[in-house]
Length: 496
Image (tube, rainbow, N blue to C red; front, side, top):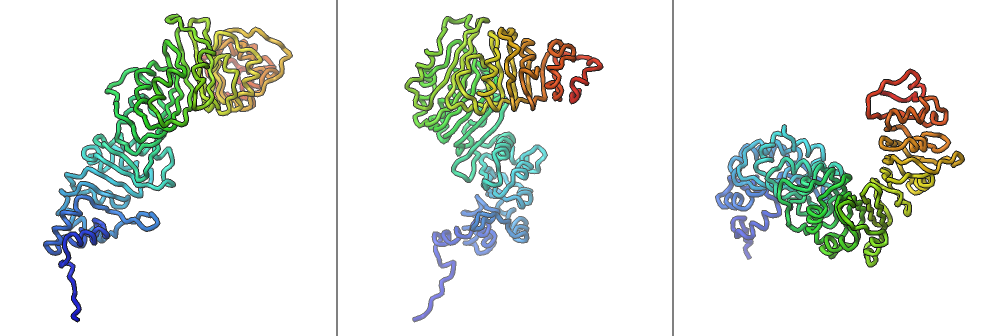
């Protein structure tokens, strides 16, 4: 029986493609371009649209292509197919060498093996490839290892990419799920990140400086089908709850976890019924809802004087967690209402009145107190125990304390670093600066009106306030002052 030798060219195109697919686009083009007419045709037609300029080892590590091979490819082969290439996979050592040529139809990048710093270097206005990124790239995928990118570097990279790649309509990762944690200035910036380009975004945490009631662009109605977790925090009051925030949340129909920390200005209270009808009925898969919503309501425009019991009753059949609430109708024709999930997870709380005394705040470190009724000694005694991590405290209350007893025990504020008393009665300065009333071992920053500080310290001679004042390193006044000669004796660590 004669042995038959089968030549590669004897095989049909379909079999050749199966074989060549095992090699990868770069090796096929490097080996077959300018060989036989048939193999050259197959290489050009099937492997020149998408080229992988990287080598992935079995352990996931990325290696560069041999420098000599890459040099020959750039000189001899790229010029022949440059107008056919639509997609490239690039690694750090070859990106500039390859992209020094012109690729008129290139629109997709896959970037592998980039560190955060190296990646960000290419997405700047001074980058050698800036025009390509801005004018051509419509799709981009990052293939990265989890140990290379932390949350901050990951967020910075995505924010920079979206800013530079103006025509990019898709941004993703090799991972099936993508997480983004970011700070933005406006709600428009938040919506910009949720415009549909990051298809694999599954978890999005955003802190917005201000949520404006109107937008320069039309808010999208596209459903965010892949988003499983969403957290929105805004520290300033907004009137945009109904017109913008609710509309965004209604797009998140597959959400499993929702976190909201909001301060709203509206005429009616947000209770369990409102939350269900406006938001939660659109999220059938929601398992966990963590929230704190503060409402400021000018009662001069409404007769809706709801009570705490009324609000609590709207959460009777609440399936997510226990809910706490407080509402205060103050003497200045305003009402403040807080609703929050329990256990309480908030880290900052503003416009807290005397009514917050019913709960424990294990994570809270930034607190602003506001009331038209005085905060008495027993309130601060509760505060020191219920908020053990309190670091920053602002007291906004011009009402004098009623119960001023000299035999009150000293209260320990073990972690208090900064105290703001600019809009507070002098009684609260006494409450914290007198060593018989308060121990503040870490207090270093005080903001207060100068004339009140003069009164409390008896023109910087009062012995009972000197111990707590001695440790202050920074004093902040609203007005420019000329310190008296003995001022620095009272505040030895103060530097102007």
